[in-house]
Length: 470
Image (tube, rainbow, N blue to C red; front, side, top):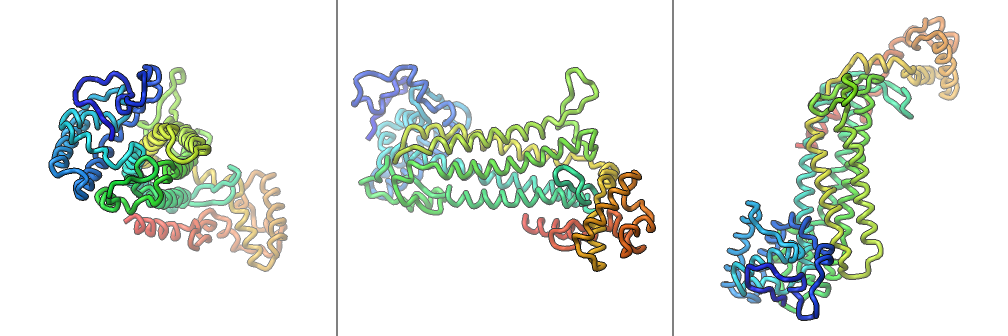
């Protein structure tokens, strides 16, 4: 069992826990290089949570005495209060969150604190802490995605009949309603929630009890610890439990997809806000001006979200690279898992918080959207479908409409502005009922099926989405 001096003075070097094996202290440079306390101290509450469950299991199995358990619970309770009040003194020479807390506990309660580390290692201890931390982070992320989805639903509901151009290749393709466009992002985020929820199942397994790599000779009860900590079960192989970080990699992959979806939305917000489009206006509180051009209103938040997606993608690649060549079991490389993971969590939480609010401040320029939909012959496919329904093979209809578009383009008019006589020169199947087909409203209303852009279908999709969120 590790022996830590029972005093409140700083230790002389980072070898104190294993000093019997070494003939010289670790250099100050190595202490700084190998220490993780500057970033892993955020695991403190989870470390205490895991230690309490471990101590109670040890006492239940008579591995430590009831008096030791009482002292450990009291000591860890005091440390938790110190951490929460910002009064805990973190020491670099104690290397990480685990040894800092253990040293403080031993200072407070003496030998009972030294017994806490019985039947565990820092290897299974840190794996447990990270899983507890990530489980809580996933729960917060899912809540924030839901908040953003609710904001999207409110925006979509206000614009179930606001016609805009739908694009492919960033060229005007067919008319859609703005509410339908926004609901596409709801669906993306819905899958993101599903991925996060599925990832949580694999995060929520207990490594504690694997010890350093091979398990322990003490009569431990891992299932008891798992129940106390709310885990769904235990990691079934001790080597795997302490050495793999695939659960963190999987989370970062899911997070990268969330950020990718938000980056796509950001790109559209940036385009839509530009004077060339003029579709929307973002609230001033999400924008900045220029230091030299007084007329500018820059969409800084969407631009940063777009940029931060690359940051999260980079963390995913970093973790994949970290794991790719490690032999079993634990290696010090795994200390490098925390900063990418923590920054991914922080970036995603901050992005979701600000985007849920940003959505509530979007003002839509219906007229600009409608005017844009009138450009680019957005109802050309409707004319082709009209001819096909009249009996013309689609490929022939496609060619006839292409010629009609060329004619309209030369005269600077939309298809709907051509006269019946002009339209009939491309097909005798065209009758007076064509003008209802060529309107923007006629186009969107005709897509009246599940998943279509007809306002009735969009309203139904919004209702279904609210039920899903409830």
